[in-house]
Image 1 (tube, rainbow, N blue to C red):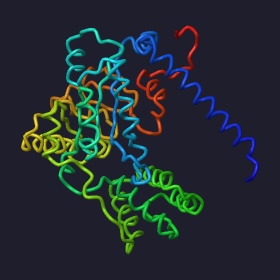
Image 2: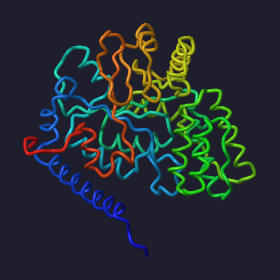
Image 3: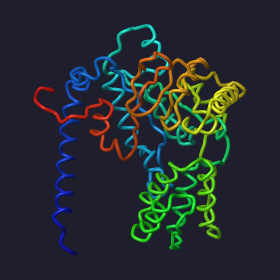
Length: 368
């Protein structure tokens, strides 16, 4: 076993200190209702005290069996721990309840948390719903209506599945013509050095994220051609059925729209956005769903034009991602920020607590 470099030793020490730091915070937050007290001491939380968390998927018990979705997944045991913490320490309300409080100008507790899910994935029904029901916690599921009841894959998963198979095959990765030359070359070089499927899939997804929709189609075709002749078992399905969506609503889950295909609004013009809204809500109504009048911005993106258009179409509130201002200066559609929760940014529990409390600065004695 070779000697570790100074940099590697520093990284190990840093990781150890970081782990102890989060453990200290968790112990403090869990005891004596510190969550509430710390949020009230955070100036940024005084005006907008609530937190909306955004989940996407619950992973399988064994991460080895996962397609490369760790950047959007939470392990079922971690998910349960997180919801149990919220149940005990926070005031979990539905998204519609939060909007009613905002609209009527009522006081909102700094311990207020709203739970949302994006994607309409099968595991939302099979893994998330039972825990939500057991703990009697409300939530909102935002679904891309055209994927419900199908075996389709969103493009990110198409890439992840192909990269997973490609790495297993041991083939040489080509320079993809649909991606900018230098980036495509870097991806090829990365494949020669790295065998971690997660990192490789994330790299390709990140590169494809910034190409035009037309080039994205070409890229998916190129990547699909890489695994021609490789046999693999495709999962039965990735998304809920309409019966399962109706069962979620019957269990008290609010159902909202993520559009038809969950396409970023940055890729849609006004006419396409109108079609996206109209057809997704029509599909919800036609399948016996009484949808929430809150739209979820796919991938958290919006433009000034689409914000204005959403307001004109009767959507005074939408949920995004990241750190949006809930009340834009023009007082049109109000964009409520959400905090993305997954394995990489919210594990262990202490990290999740800090994320929900939106604590970004190191703690000092004054915090206590």
